[in-house]
Image (tube, rainbow, N blue to C red; front, side, top):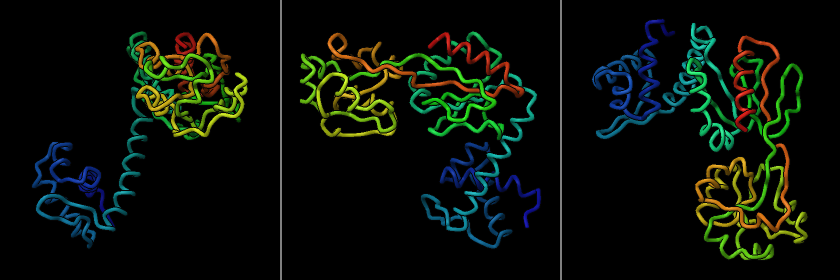
Length: 290
């Protein structure tokens, strides 16, 4: 059974196991490589099992070592969260959960403006396609794709209306003179988009679309594929704003096609809770900037 004095050794083990190197762990923890090696050797003796397989160039985890890493990583993450929750600076910490493509393409470029207006606020962003569970206290705000199904005890704010249309590189756009020219190029599919190619083809009386040549489960990857000349993506102008402004992407049928419009993203935060005031400040700012 481990004593509390083993916590430092566990921290050393977690760093070395995560980085796959005693030297890298030494740099991260500001210790000498020999101190790392001695601490891990003592931990192995205390546990009665080898945690690493060592050779002259690198180290790798044994099966017991991998098992311990899984538990150690979770434990240190929980400890970090606990410290964060009782920190005296918590009143100025805003924890944002965000849909991945919105985080990469919209929120990240705009955050400097929010921090300039609110220099006392620290923002931490995590992204996934799932909804934030406010009941576990990990997040204060959620920016989600699609309207939340459970709105109980939540304030839900629709963000900007989004236009969804074909987007492509300037080189491809130069040869797209009529709508039917789109049949000459590969279509790029965004798997999770509510508006798909069949919707755009139907809106423009083009019949059944060809099978997309490639698909992505994140919009930002579909946008990058289109910007790199791999085909034509059907994507949101909100998510593509920076690429459109820079000229990496263009709207080939802007004046001759029918566009699809909808509210794609929503911001939600709890009606109660300690961070309601800060969440409201963030929500008001994002609504203004959308």
